[in-house]
Picture 1 (tube, one colour):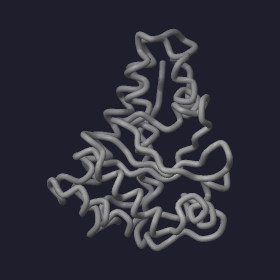
Picture 2: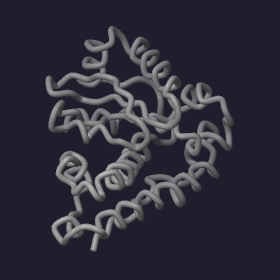
Picture 3: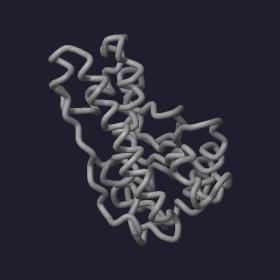
Picture 4: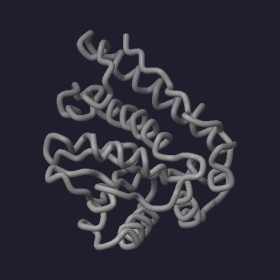
Length: 208
């Protein structure tokens, strides 16, 4: 029986105020992330023991094409949602923001020209996502970084076998991530989000 559980937040629901409100964080975590957790368990439980006993969601997502077709869509959606949100919570912190330093800063400068150019690219293309999805800074096969968008809850890990992409920093632009505070003003939400980015965590993922 698949037994993924909802990871706890690394801070209180109100820690990211005023940029992300406590009520949104509580609903996002306890309702939406919980739903992806439950959906992943249900999807895996419909398969054989070799899938029911898996406990590494990243390994599942990396090998999404090997998931039986009957459950592949559900595993992609719920497994991606489960892992994307776990990364999302850890990529934010109270008193975050600013700019990265060290190797990550160098990689961003090499790929985008400057941190400000990266920020503009990330913000513009993430705001422009049609419908629901995520903007991602990812590490690629060459050891550098690049920006991609992914639809719905599909994880960058699903492109591992072809492109060796590792998700570093993701931004959720599903309406449930911001609508209580920002309504239809997605750009305002993205602008505010930069103030809570946990660059120490992103840099750690880059080094690993």
